[in-house]
Length: 354
Image (tube, one colour):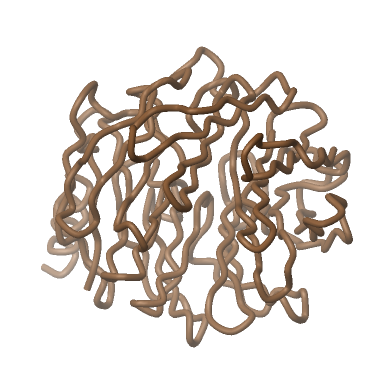
């Protein structure tokens, strides 16, 4: 009887039903109008404006949602959309500050958007051939950083957010032999930290770059073994969550997700219950790390880790490709884009909470 009940619960979740994990459960969904959502990338929540932004490749736009009413507000079009090569599709990384939204596009450009007019107001070329992807922002110095992860060699571009949007520097990362993933700005350290899945063609050796925004140079490269870092977000204290791609198809590394410490520059905890991950985030409201694990043990899932103890809590089964996850630290909700793939996804935004 217990086995039959478990199968029933998993089946319901895979059909976009309600999922639970020690206080985390699906509490709703947000419909996405237009062409049915089946291709998307990064999401970002701005708690100041109560907005959630999603890179919607299907509709060639940045979609904007109200996180108070939890409804679709509109979209800013003008991106290249889905291309034959995924590395040339866009939009990709997205971030908002003030009245502006910045996002990378598949044509190696950064689009600057005005939220009030809902229009693109500037296009900045990074000079590459492939997509301009994941992003971070240094509010102290007004510097935006974006990764061209698919160019060879991959590189990072630092851009001023002041009028004129001057390019402040370009950092070629020769040691990154499988792209560049999520940058993160640590305000207390005054540095950018950037996840690198693979160093020196060694599939078991990833790393984290430390970059000084003032000099636009790499200060150091910290090696991280058996993780293949992708997602990156700060947690409580000096800890951070790494969404490890370890365990993904072809990686030849067992499942792994890691908690990393900015101070010691070392991994302080791991779990083999989650792997094959992309985006990872921390919810201060829930006290949880949430990991988008498209190739988790047992199938696609949202991995949940207690940020206080660094202990794995549960994997919530999810529709295919739940890689885009963001946390709203104002209301404690977690947003997960769900593609309409056969009968498994909803083509909507799944909302999780307590």
